[in-house]
Image (tube, rainbow, N blue to C red; front, side, top):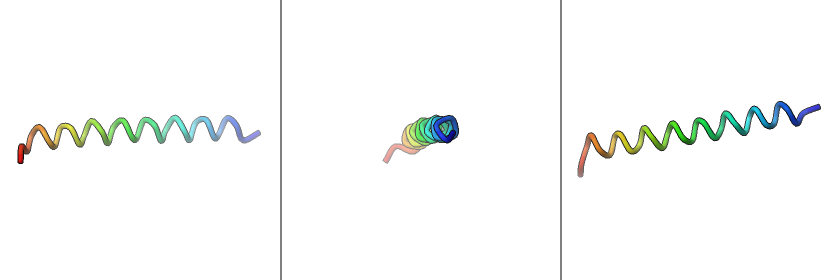
Length: 33
């Protein structure tokens, strides 16, 4: 019983990490310091 919920949580966390990484790369490209 909980494995399904855990897998969905892990998948969501991984997706969030990917989104944050893409956003960071975009910000760095848009603002070269």
